[in-house]
Image (cartoon, rainbow, N blue to C red; front, side):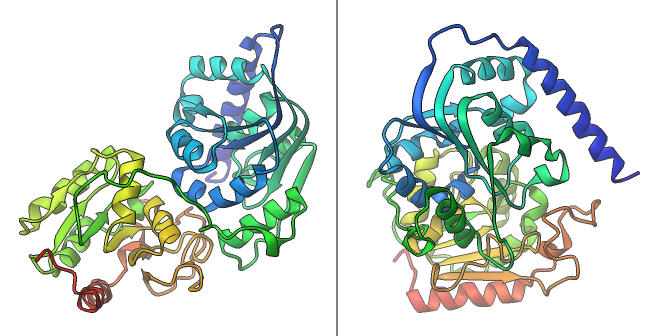
Length: 381
């Protein structure tokens, strides 16, 4: 029964979205023509890892459009210099009216080649977006995708599917293989993920010599419990400035941590910063403390001293990073469990924090942060 229910729900979604397509107007107006359209609806962390590859790929292609998550438009424009079309992914999945309007706009796009580089495809989002575009060639990736577990039918929406070897590879290496397969460039000639300039403004804040903390992630069950994180932060000397940041969803966690910390130099900016400002805070920090989330991958671009609390959901895929790519990363994880690499389909469904995260040792975390502080002489003085 447990396996049937998700399939039934997804079937309902599929039929509902399929029926919505009947409300899409036929394309009678003059189409907007591009040589290549890239679908890149990834979240900020996943996007950060492949920005360098994207820039290299489109460098010699004129008239390219990137369809991306609306919150990532400015980052793509500044770092790649390519026209974008933003889609509010959450509204696209949840708001039928927005979905129909967006699909009508997508139907007016015409190109020779549409490419979905995502190794984790989602039939109801990026696959469907690619389906609506008028393209002679449609290229996708058969990677570790939810499409395999939901509806393989969306593979038929592509004229070519790239099958990648994912075994024991970090995402940066997988991305190189994907871009190599599609571009024809040798993997050895594909840029490393950190060969990119996000081109953020230089003087957004006046903070200096501080530790930046992002207590949240895309799923609260993947966060180190705030009481444990607070216990770690309490060991940081009081003269060291701590800045807490994150999205609006992280405000309750940050407020709880800030209330428990007896540190007058702590500043809570959670929910108050733009993506560009968050990147600035990470880039200019002395040390980052975070869960496995977008800040980790941004810090990797700049090799910022980082402490990451790492669960086992897809251990080795996104993190830990290979030491050569991210020398200043310190990954703290629990002892390996038999259920590691569950792709976050946790068998312990009714826990507040997933065990592979909850079992992370506070002592190891404190020891690591104190070594960093002592070696770098971090202080506001």
